[in-house]
Length: 468
Image (cartoon, rainbow, N blue to C red; front, side):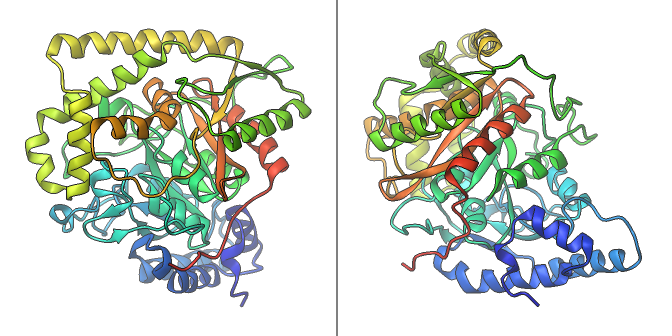
């Protein structure tokens, strides 16, 4: 048995299992051994699904031996964020109150990955209720960045980003409502996809309670992987309608061919707060790679960005503030501080203002649509600053400043357009990432451009974590 199968990509593993060159059981055992070896250093995998994974691998191998057709991700291990349902395993959201909430059914993206032959190998860590920048949960403690344990791994899909980066899983399944897939992808040196609103079916109910409007419109589930090819394979598996989610749309995987050369709008400093010179260099190098591939690049400004950030805050915090007196009791001190400071900066509004902001959002989406009619792709940093140390907020000013490097992640989540974060070298000794932002339901354009950048900079992971 090749004990280092964990180093292979998802597409490589699936092809080898399908051809019979390795068994799914060998793939799973290799990843379980890798988890045992490195998870103590990074604390990314929380609930290890070893027995279930072995059982699924045996079934895959039985089906292949019987001559049955295997799925495109046959035998590929993946992690699942602690707020996404895996049948028979608690969906804890990282908090004590929910540790006994065991769903009877998989959420749609988990089911789709299973149907494609992929195998859940464990839940992955996240901040309490995904409501803090601190990569720690009450139940499982802190997750560490494998490149430098004193640095943040990014949130809130922290565990999935780290698990993929160190080879504990070939794919991770997280969610993104303002960068929560893209940041851990960027900060850990892997790739991540935030799909368009409605592209993937999802189930974000907590104990059966339906989410309110902002939580219906903004968060989306998305995959993390070490290569863009793996990200594409996950995208093709996850896309499509599902009776469990009426929001999911039957958009084709690829849109119509665009007139060439395709114009790319380059966004250097979205909010005018400054961009770190090594991050700026990464944008420039990525732009050079795209130009060499035939794209035309022009610097652009994002329309109504200040209004976008205000609208995002008002819609989310108004809904959140209504139940904050109950929700805050579930959180750690760090989680409570994060939301308290957010509410101080953006207090929940009256009904009239909330309703007005729903109209503002549509107008901003309309302006984005006009911009992207001319520039079907946008290129920008995933974060305008290098990977920081773990951040503790002491006042509203420090809280606001910490959010600025992520402004474009926030804006794209508010508008609903797709984005892919892909590694592009290093800044301040840590991985840096750029994101390709596409028109609605044009993930194909994002992935094509991301592959160009990956070809230029190479694949950074898997890596061995630095011991803390």
